[in-house]
Length: 382
Image 1 (spheres, one colour):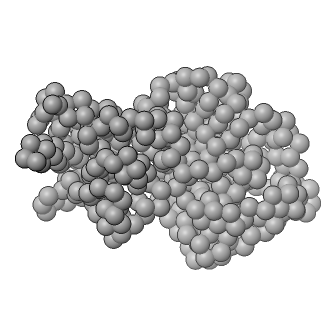
Image 2 (tube, rainbow, N blue to C red; image 1 turned 90 degrees about the vertical axis):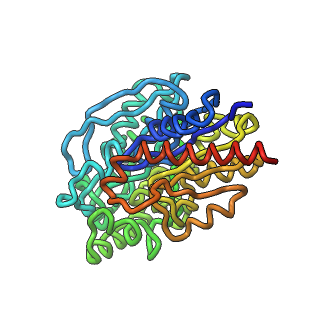
């Protein structure tokens, strides 16, 4: 009897998109079992590739718009309108992401989420009333202030002037007026896909934990943390929602806090959201074996990333899972404690990073072939 395989990987960043990883897995399995049935479910957990993953899994239409980039220049960003015509999937990284800013130009003091707000407004203008926002991969630490301004909120300094872009300016925030924003988003339901549970401020907050990867020096981290703390106080006073300590408030440089406060958004692990939408758990009864994976598997994977969500769901259904990894770091062993899960590096010998990334498809195919061969051997020798 031919194998029934589910291939549900994340992207291998810098090498392959999630759909390409799933195809490489299917090729490897079919080398051993030409009649194998392989269902491809490309995944993302809120960061880069989220829009592609939703379109690949569910279909829909890609919509491109010119919006404000992290440092104020115009960029072209794409979002998805799903087949129901009323649900949009927006990836903040497409408009406000770190990938849009060369390393030498990174400036978290003035980077803005305005472009993400412009994408939300574009989706609303198209008639979407359910909006999913993936918030991984940001270049910003502005607490979602730019997003709110793009949607009609006014963030004013003590002289009544609009705050300039960036998180540093939040230190001068005096009051918030939300009249136009309230009219824009009335009747729209917002869900945030995130794999981060950090609070807004403090040693585990947006500036301290994520600021350095966005170019923040220790001095900048201190400036941004103080500014975000003041921002959180004004949000609580003027909007009546104190979310500073809520898990996920610090996601994407505090965008989590902004989305919860300005838009009443519900935060949920991105992988759980996608698995629910594609009815992943319903498909597990059909499968003999589940493949997942991503470029690096380590302790962070257990914080809600795609492979962890897949392994957890498969364990609940009693299905074995193989996690293919470009590299394996500390903490990866925790994933193998989830049901019948094995973490398997795809690189089997000495190889440069450049070579491994360039040969990722072939390495993944070879790893999937080895797994399928062993799985069939185990099944026939019981």
